[in-house]
Length: 226
Image 1 (cartoon, helix red, strand yellow):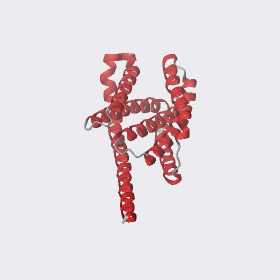
Image 2 (spheres, one colour):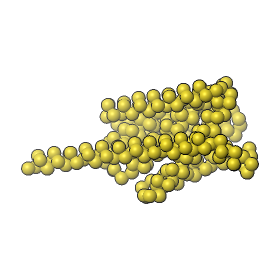
Image 3 (cartoon, helix red, strand yellow):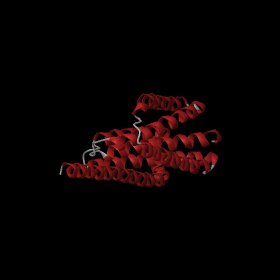
Image 4 (cartoon, one colour):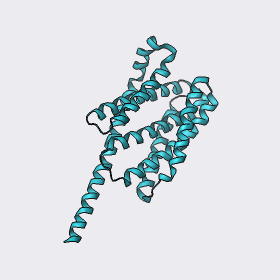
């Protein structure tokens, strides 16, 4: 009887974990869909905002993205508010990605954009499969990720403020490496956690990493030809 109860408990735990992982990826796919809508809307959003904010469009969008990210992080366990916050963040991120893609395409064509999109998909699939197959705990990447993201964040701000194109490319390389490590760490944590009540939080973390990888790859592939 004890063996049967133990087996049933393990089976229920496995089902709960599978349902949790499925929920995380459903949230992630939903975020991609909303971001795609934002990317399609990017020219119209930019056209509406430029007469109001002028040359500060980039800073306004950056502020909106950062604000919606903080909002989404703070309410990630509070349904249905978490859906609204997550949608606002992913839509804003999609608008920014769409504008960046158009800027790069205007100087280098759409090839770097498509390549960056495809490479982001390859990185996502490779690291996800690695985490699923190895079942390793990648939390040892924590310090590397923290330092890398700090360099990425402050380096990006410096590149924007002082218009440092070459430095921006270096920071993009750092971002690809740091966010790839974070993607591996987050996927590993998702597979090992016993807290199944925060699928939105895990999806948000995965989305942020993939977004930064995509933007950074676009900058690396198309930046020198703009």
